[in-house]
Length: 119
Length: 152
Image 1 (cartoon, rainbow over the protein chains, first blue to last red):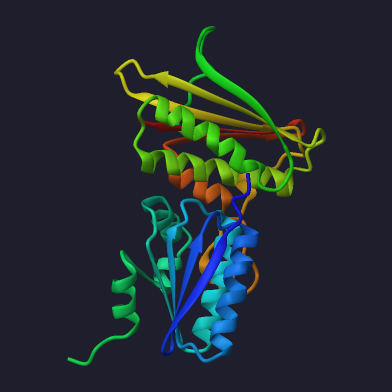
Image 2: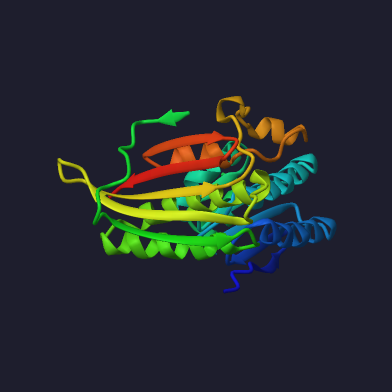
C-alpha cells in the first residue's frame, strides 16, 4: 500500500523544477524539503514544484512546504507551484500559501512566471 | 460544536459501510480508498471525492496525533443518503475513544503564525470545515466524533 512520495529534480539555469509523485505527508514533505534545500544550497534562485502526479496531501506535508517557502523568502528567491488538483489548490488557498507563492496551471506557465521576460 | 445540522444516522437498511483502522502511519489512505469507492458508487464528481478524501485524511491524522486513543483504533462509518429534495450525499463519521478536546478552544491557525515559527500545525479542523458541506464535532471524555457530509 505504499503511497510514498517520490521527488525528482531538474535544473534549468538557476531554476530548479521539483516533481512529486505520490502522497505528500510528513515523509513526502521532508523529501521535498531535502531536495529543495539542496537546490538552494547549490545556487537555485527559484523553485518550481510540479505536483501533477500528486492527488493527495495532508496538512503536515503542507506545513513542511510552508517551511520551504519561508526559507526561499529569506533568500529573496521565488517559489511557484503548478499542476495542482482543484482540491490541493483549494487547500493551499485555505492555508494561505497562495498569498506568498504563485500558483500556475502548468509547468510552462510557472517557468515563465519565475523567469519574467523584459518587455 | 456543530456546523449545520446533520440528521441522526439513517433508519435500518440505510446504506452504510463500517471499518476500523489501527492508529498507524498511512492507515488514513486505507480509509480514503473506501470513501472514494462509495463516492464513485453514487457518481460523485472526482473533485468532490478528492475533497472528502482530504477531509478524511485530516480527521484521521488529527486523531492519530492528538487523541491518545485507548484502543489504538479509529472507528469509521461511511453512509450514503438522499435528501427529500433528491440531493444525494456521502457522509463519513470518524470516532475515536481518546481524551477528547474542546473544538471551540482551538485557536485558528494562520500562515503568518507559521512563519513566525510559533505554530506550523493546527490546520486539520479548518481544512475539514472548508472542504465539507456540513461538519459536526462532538467531543468529551469518552472520545471524539467527527461527522462530515458532502453533497453530490
